[in-house]
Image (cartoon, rainbow, N blue to C red; front, side, top):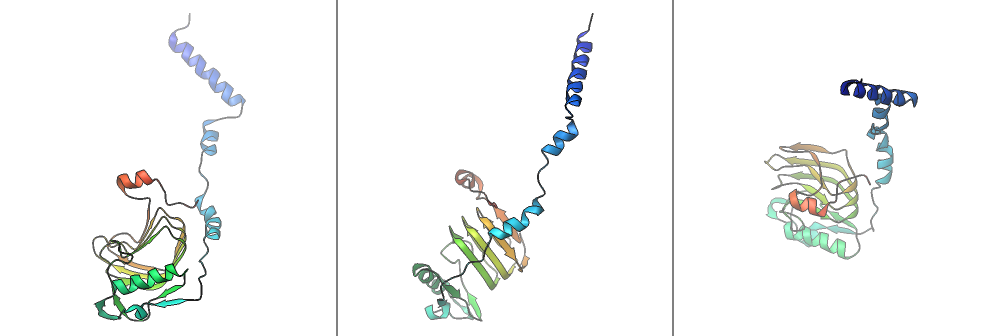
Length: 202
């Protein structure tokens, strides 16, 4: 007469014997679900990120009225240079030597926001004291941020915010921030969940 406990114990031994007979164990199961070493994927990911080349056109912001005296507000001038560069099929927006005071570029709350761009290269710039975040690529693919120095010590002073962006590389840059240096985001709150575009390498 078997008690319920003995029957269950026997069933457990039988099940254990079946697993042992197939060479399957808890350790094997754990090994099979172990995620791959993500660092081994780095060469593949970097191979997918290629700094773009642009038409040999230069849009010097001073030609649009920008003044690098540290006092003149140049938001409209810089935006006009960016808009014309985009409208004519691309090129290089040049910020020459000087101190150029500006509000948000492309009329956004962050300092510089790139929306739905492909083959983005942002380099060789010193940015200081944004009202909020500094460069903020959103819905971008193949983005390179290179040789950028960001001084941002206010309460929302992030460095680079990569938002719902795929294949991005931040390299050879310096950050002095009161908040995050390099941030991976996928939108914000309900709006981010609704759109559902992650920052990823795929």
